[in-house]
Structures are given as structure tokens and as C-alpha cells.
Image 1 (cartoon, rainbow, N blue to C red):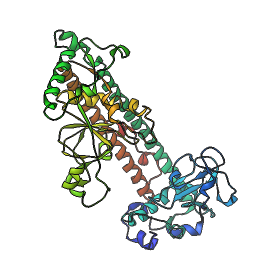
Image 2: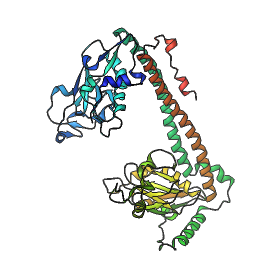
Image 3: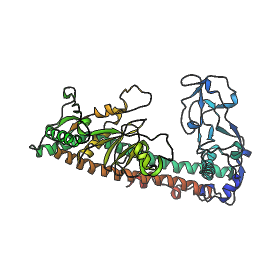
Image 4: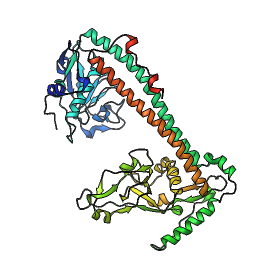
Length: 472
């Protein structure tokens, strides 16, 4: 759906301070100082992955390259040079300078070329995004959003004198450079925390985290006895429902050595693995839209949290009958798509679809230990060659996952130690995220003051300290 409200009306009614201007400035329509060129509908039959001219599509706006090339003939008007300003005309109406190689302008992307020296290119870089966002906000309820070149031409940009633009650009860039340094530092901290999180889990399931604990508890019951008890209990419990096939044990001769008291076990030995099922057809009101939570891959992989507490979709009682219902406090594992191999414990009961497996009949603390262990196996599971175009972790592969099983008492210690360390990491990550959000607010504040004519150009008054962002 194209924009039906005049852009001038959007700007007039908007409360976004990024659309403001100093009272002494005028405004100028973007179309009066720039040429807007719509991209060309190049034939998809001439697309290539590795040969030809790079083809810049709407998904490439804001990136430094494209995965698509074009082999056919083209008009030189549609050539994009590094540094050209591009706008995506569908979706979120993103804009960015192109920093990739010389390429071609595909349809639904436009190129903005300033033809007047009264407007500085760098000043346009700072003013334009706020106006595109305002237009996007107006069309936010539309399923498919389209932006026309006419609407872009009608954007009423603020027009300070050229020398004021130069001073503002210099001051904005000086303050942004400080923010960029702070943000880069925060992102490095976040990356280090992610690596530390992975190291904690790896150390835990290898027994390194509890080396001292084992020395202090030499007489603990070995995991082999625990495994025997688990198998006995499962046989007794499952024999009431189904004829239990003896689960296959790992071939320990081909596996690494374990700490004293540990043993190798398969997921099949430790749990009952079941896969979900989807009512068909999807979206049928007979099956979907009831009151029973519908657990799919999306909510499980939406965040890095260990527990699932809510899902956006539901099924009816009829849908429940055609799928598989899982009780709360069940360990789940995604088994299809690009995000397979992600474990999570659901705190809500619900039906799981066929992209999710459940590991049943697992008690505590083993359930939490398996949760942490499976997190260390995600990359390996995604690399398993399963002979299918769509990544898929079938039930047989899940059952055959080899688990380094600690004694019961050591499991409790591992879980406690991992949770203690992960809680510290969570707090630090929350602090980093809060400061990243603050940095973005400061960035918007700099622009707001710049467009209002309030941005001081003296270094003393205009400083934004990066230290204040990382002090916590």
C-alpha cells in the first residue's frame, strides 16, 4: 500500500523532535535539491551468484555487499557508485550510503543524488532517516508498505545556511565518534561475555568446573549406579504404557575419557524422546485459535533464556488431539530449520509442533544439566549430515546424542555453580544492553539539539563522555 497522506502533513503533525528545525531556518523539498532515481526491474533469469555486475536489492540497503549479480545488459543510469545514498522503498524504508562495490540499482530501491550545493551530503545523511521513519510509522499498520519516489521528493528537509550545516556536521561527527568508541567497547564486552558463557558451559560438562568438589567428595556414588537406577525406573514406568525397547548405550571406546565417577550415556537412556505434530491444514480455525499454548521453534529460539514462559499462538481441543501435548517443566529441543539444536525448559503446558522434540521422564537436577549440556552441542548438531535440503534433527539422531553423565551429587553442584556464574553474566549483559540503549538515546539527543539549532560547537559544552557509558 502506497502512502496516502501528504508528507508535509505527517511532518506538521509529528511530535518527533528529529523532524524539528530552528525557527530561523527554512525548509526545502528533497526533490528540489536532489534527483530521485527508481531502480530497474532486472530479469531474474539473468541473476547469478558469482558472476556479473553486483545487483543491489532492497535487502542489501545498509549492507556492504550483495549476494546477487546480474549477467545481462543494463543502462548506465542504474549504476550505483560507492558512497551513493540508497533508500529501500518497501518494508521499513531504510536508507544508507552504499559502501559495497560498484553495482546496479534493482527495483524497489531508489538512489538519491544531490544536484544543489546548498545542501551538504553529510547533512542529508543525518536529516533524512528521521523523516523516513516518520513515514514508516504512519504506515506501520499496513501489511505491505510501499514508498514512492514522489513521496521522497516531497520530504520537507530543514535548510540552515550552508556554513551552519558545515558546523553542525563537524560537531555531530565529533560527538558521534565518541559514542562510536563507547559502543564499540560495549559490543566487545558483550562478545566477551558470550564467549565466557560458552566457556562456563563447556567447563561444566567436561568436569573442570567441579574438580575441587570431586577432591572433597571422593566417596560419592558413581554415575554408572545412577544410570542403572534411571534405566530401572524408566523400565518400570514405561512398561505400563508401552513395550520398552532397550535403549542403545554409547560406544565409550570411541569417546573421550571422563572424570572419575562419570560415565557415558545416550539421550535415549536418560529420557523418552518424542516429536511434536502439527494439525493440518495450518491456520484452520478448527485447530488453531483456542486456549491451549502452541509451542513452535520461534518462541524457543527468540531469546537466550533457559525457560519458556509464553507463546503467541494457541490451538483448540481438536488441535490438541491432532498434535502432542506436553506438560510444564519439560525439556524441549528444536529439531528443524536453521535454528535447530536449541534447548529450553517450558514452564507452560502446551502442544508442540513437528519442529520441536521433547525429552520426557527426566528428573532434577539431570534436566538442568542436560539443558546446559545440549547448549554446548548446538553447533555440532547443526553440522550433522542428514541428507535433507532443510536442516532436520530426527528422533534417531537426538536419541543417539552421547552425554557425559556426572554423579547425582556432582550434577547438583554443577547446576548450582553454572547458575551462579550465568546470573553474574546476565547482570553484566543487562548493564551493557542498558548502556547501548543509552548510547542510542544520546545519539538521538545530539541530532535533536542539532536540528533545533541548540547544539553548541564548543568542545567543552558539547562533549559526550564515553566513560559514562562504560562506568557501570
